[in-house]
Image 1: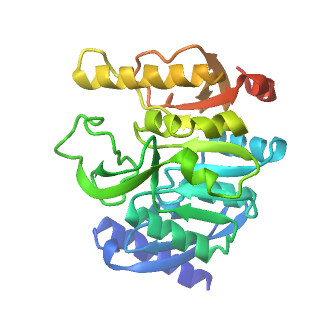
Image 2: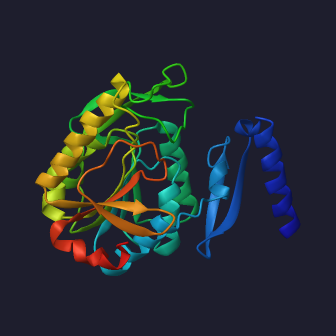
Length: 291
């Protein structure tokens, strides 16, 4: 069996390198955080889940939140289940709600849940925003992890084209329909659309006071229209979170530490794009991680 598995890995790599993996499907069992996880590779989708990136900072925060906080987990921007897999490797019984509007990624993530028998994990085929709409999703392939619904957010408009038209809903309305008693944390990775997501979750954030793990991509420069647009959106987002009494921390990924910030400067460091937002009354919970 071991030799068959190695053969499948090798064949998968060869097909990927040749650009032919999209015509094939395979199923593998790997270990993530010493837990067996079943990984489907469907027409090439999910291939990189076979080689999960070790994100010590993310895994530390997930473990800490699971150990010290109560409630379900909200994953806004599931993509192909990268964070889902990390969560399941630590607790496969937790109530998990994922939101993924890209139909290719949604269908793959549903299969991932099915293959790993995760009945408490639920994915909805919509994005979250501040209003209900059908919007354009821009990307460089049909399952792009960098896909965005914010037109003009990427400079390379030739590379990033409309790959889907997708539905988005106001998060407060969607979550109000679920039987939720508490929310542990919300992970938001939506490639520039954080402002609309948070606007649409204001009632949820005020009611449940969850921790937020939030990617905010850099404002590289204020010299370009793109940079000015990004900075304006970033400022609006941070002001909204301040008004809801959330404290901002930069996640220092290599050190697995937190640095308290008042603002996010103009920068081009792609290693400084992940932030922890904590209700002011709960900030001491993460004092052991401060640098």
